[in-house]
Image (tube, rainbow, N blue to C red):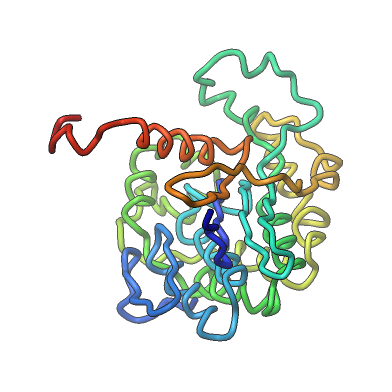
Length: 300
């Protein structure tokens, strides 16, 4: 049986490269032997620059994740979490890091019984964020460049400005009534009470400062000190039961990869609590049992 045994990192990160002249949020970057795919042209180009500067897949993944948290915070960011799937050629095995958000210790599960949760009570859904801890753990184990070097593109984008992409543009308009309640978000994205238009340049100096703190202090720069206190205070104002102890106690979890065989290959993918790996396995294995070739175009 063949093994898909390239050095690879796959990141799913759930809620900042200088703004290059002519770079749009949807720009594409050509690649030779290396490739990066993200939902943002800015993040993709930043990750490719990390590779060109001597970084490897883990460094590029960290760069991409941090830039995405700046340019598209409705989909990714330090307030969320994620997973990492790494093939470690030196160890000859696949490693999975689980850094999804966790529920605050004081949460009452009954608060989640009513779905959807009313906007006024959505703060109860805020989990203890894991992305910062996860990216730092990735770097501790496999990073080649300094974490500060991998974060530099994200910091520059936050300080100098980044182009507002189409997904952010749609989200800001669709959810203005909810998002504009927050004073800081309102100042960034709703100046004068009106959503900024797609393609506009946005700056986020406070996020740049947070990224600098993480780069210099590690986890303490996010989970402790002024940033940690501010995060907990904001979450509790919104209705979360999060505490400083929840933040301090956050830990990344190692999990065994989900493995299955398909078309002569041994596929390594994400295990639960990620749903993506199971869905991938089910889809490919159902494909083996179906006579799709004889169904014809448009038969679905």
